[in-house]
Amino acid sequence: MGYRAPSLMIRSIALAASALACGGSGPTGGAASRVPLALSVGKGRTCVVSRAGEAACVGTKSVPVWNGSAGTTFRFVDTSSLREGVRALALGDYHACALVDDAGVTCFGSNEAGQVGDGTWTMRESPAMALPETAGAWRIALGAAHSCALWGSGGVLCWGKNGEGQLGNGDTTNVATPTSVSGLSWIASDIAAGDDHTCVVTSARGVACWGRNVEGQLGNGSTTQSLAPVDVVGASEVARRVAVGGRQACFLNVDGGVLCWGDNRFGQLGDGTRENRSAPVDVVGIGARVNALSVGRRHVCVITTAGAVKCWGENRFGQLGDGTKTDRTTPVDVVGIASGARLVAAGPTHTCVAMVTGELKCWGDNSFGQLGDGTVEEQPAPVASTIHW
Image (cartoon, rainbow, N blue to C red):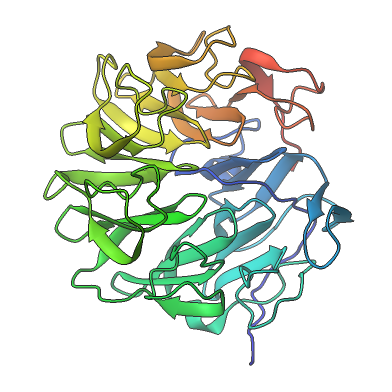
């Protein structure tokens, strides 16, 4: 099949599991063109997209790729940035996709399940080609090994791994090109993807999910897998945004509250327990209205209307930012960020925020230097992060 090349200059980017947040102010020093549009974090990597359409990252330059040779180390590109026309960047476990002006979605990295979407199963070094089916796309979301996009007036396309029905097309066969989600009776306004499930906010301000459901992550009151969208209980007419992590999900409601469901082994649902939930439960103890929400693999972070950051769930690497490594079943304050936060992104084992001052702060796992503080030491409280453009 044919492809269109977006107008990109590629310097470098490496891949990680994804958490994406949009809007706000930026990580490096003062230039208006580098105020960030998006902040994404993942396995060993932190990336920022500026309003000028540049992307830059800090952390590992190489990741293991499973595409015929398990554990092969591969350096994707040389210098760490997509330099032109980038509107959003999403990170899967071992692949990434960028949303590019006037071109659509371009993906690269591991491709054993077709998650790059180019009709092959071949690993791709660089995001040089856009997928023609995604022209007109305006939002992207990546799971562990699948990719999705919203396009046009709210249609949903997904591709890649489908063993749990996470593509929503009615079967469990991997798909190497973008394919429409089945049986939609609504248009979508937001989308998020976890390890093996996907969720959207619908035009009725509800939430619908599909894919794996062993932990109750579809939120429909059952633990039965669904190969097509099912409605999340109690979300109709109240949902603003949806965020999905490994095997759990949360939505932000119109009143600024947060409700979560699914896996709760580490307290990541924020209801004060460790019991899995197959329908949404209120997060307790936030104590303020929430403006922004990000779900990591086993933890969740929010920004309140005052600009404070609060997190809960797994804290093995200090990813909650409260100065400890103790798991929390209800929200705790991130040290030193009581105001001024504009963007938050929670990844597998670390978290970052962009401040209104332009500063970037990160905490948690730092094995690959992904916190951007010049070290590889874990940090259980925020440290200043530097990304070099």
